[in-house]
Length: 433
Image 1 (cartoon, rainbow, N blue to C red):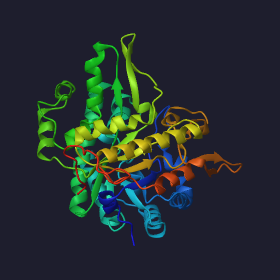
Image 2: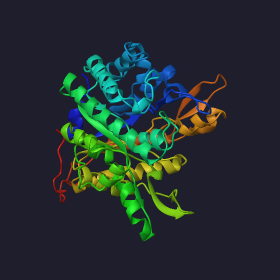
Image 3: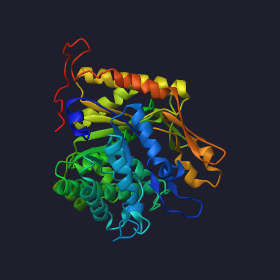
Image 4: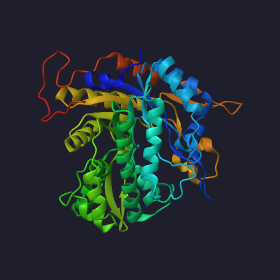
């Protein structure tokens, strides 16, 4: 029997892990292709990777489809690898996917990537094709992972297609991405009415001691919710970022469109890392974000902010640390303790994901011709280590057993202490529908 992930979210708590699935296949001078499945040899070792996921004891896996591979041409589809992989994951290993439809990157044939006039419709057509083919195996989808990070890399920093720079570029990409999220969600529910959505965003918190930076701090903290606010029809003249949108080329027509076609999500996924929580300073007339020694307990503060803003169930969809194994274990212990405390206080935190399951390649490798293994980031439950045959072996760390220990200790019911006493609930506590 297939694990009912949606029911588990509604009635219990979901423990998950995930496999990094960033896909930026386009190359240009000084920039090489970035496909994490290729780099980490997941295309080769996918059965082993799914076996390891099952051995950890998780019931859910954040995992994505490489759109550029399954649709190599506008009217051509190649499902061979995903057919085999999803069948094995669900029917053999009995793990439910939280399927990333878009984890960055577009097909090579889509000129100008996210600002192609047809992008929103194209990505919705792709989502509909996925739901038609895999609706019996997949019940929960992420329309687009981390839209603000995507817009930052593709629209502000110019490192990913369409290689735009500055604030105008950022908002142009973000609006197109968000329009795609809206059409994707509508397409999913048309094809698969019982589908559920976990929309995922990178979340954090900025602050500054300098009162002159107060407006910038407020804008930074508000901006992380902008794709959510746009897609759910929350942006009007009263929105804090409304003037910023108009200043950078977003039109009244665009904002009216989001009002008319507003959607809802079932869960908001929060991706949180030590570098997500940092102070802001001004140096030489430029804003800098300092790397901060963030305690894992800070996750609690950030999730309260997320819930207060969105008023809907929240899931930790990515968290881990780039410290050594001892430091990573401390991060795991502290962030899980924060989740337990929030559930006891009445907040509907419905799941936790240690991400990634094994090491990944830092995105900076795209900008360098240096050997790739210098960019390995060891964040996972398993380390990647290259052997004499150039194969990346998966080696378990003590975090695997530690994660099992956490999963074996039941999460408290929302608003109920370990002793069974009811705590004070959050006002307007949402329910998963």
